Length: 483
Image 1 (cartoon, rainbow, N blue to C red):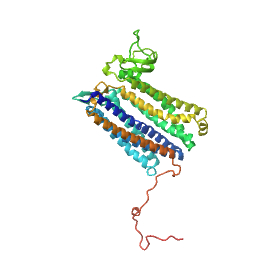
Image 2 (cartoon, helix red, strand yellow):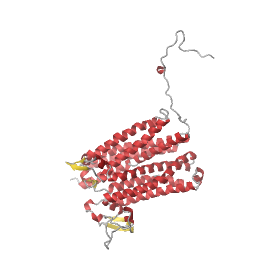
Image 3 (cartoon, one colour):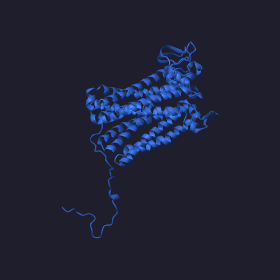
Image 4 (spheres, one colour):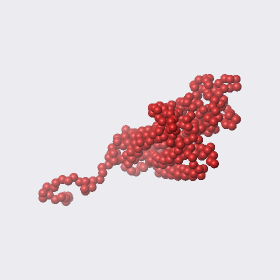
């Protein structure tokens, strides 16, 4: 007899691995595509060849990341049917259609223009090539939009009703623009810009640190890090907005993220203390250890000094999400976001003081080292943010409508383990391949020898392509040139 809870846990663990290995690629694709559009626009605007060489260098890194994202995305699409067949069947009328829209309106759109962007240098006009790069960036954002529509609907399922085991759509507008999507998509999109900007900034800082084309890479370092002065604080703001959405529509998830067990204090007053750090004990329904600050939880969730924030004691034990993972992953995500914001402000401080040049940064390299190290933080933030989002929704697959245990495929333990090992091997193979080629290209650096393409390269004319002109009678077809 197969233990249903074991099957559920294995399926969740398998899918957690698949999504964690996939999600490191699409956000960078989106953020890097947007930066490529900016750098190519700078080349057209200034006619500065260094911007051309920088664009071509980062474009190669983009191609590697894009390929890895496509490969791991295929395994994730497969895993829906393999690991969660009942869910895929029941949610197909909405969830399946949304993934289909993503393929048709975003992925195929992106695939068409990415060919022009990669192979169009010298074959199409400069403005047309810039247009292709813009469409790659825009279509990648459109892809993220559809994915967030599908995932956010699982958080706040609106616009549907359950009939004969199927979630049928009553109102497409309500289902697509569900409450969670309206704040989750901007939060994720800004995270994509942030990871792309820090990717560019960290590689540029490495080149400046090693004094390899330092003055040229100061262009991308300055552009990316100054953009982060706006993007990083905006991400913190959108995180707060999304937190308030979660508090309104899924208070159990918010309580798990905050390790908030008890709604009221011993004296009957609302418990609005915020746990800076704690060790949740799910069996006892309390924290074994905690350091809390009064009133801060209310300020964070309601922007009030005192308010009632529901604790986990307001929900049945069977409906409570796990606490340890969302509690700590949420704090790691928030800490990473705050650290990224501080790095951006440090850069702004240096620039205002006139210290943001290659020579001065090389004499005081701690900033460059910090930026290089900080390239890991956006990945940590995206990972932990996604874990917070997915684990805090448990035990629901579709919040309040379908439990995870109801959506798991019925297969043997052995089959589940085989799929897990297969997915793990494939994803690790892609990961090692991607980082091997990343490091190889970064070590090689930008191509400084190839001639810059300023216009459309004419195709070579073959003999059969020559115009069919009549030759006057008595005149030879070819004449010997006069010396």
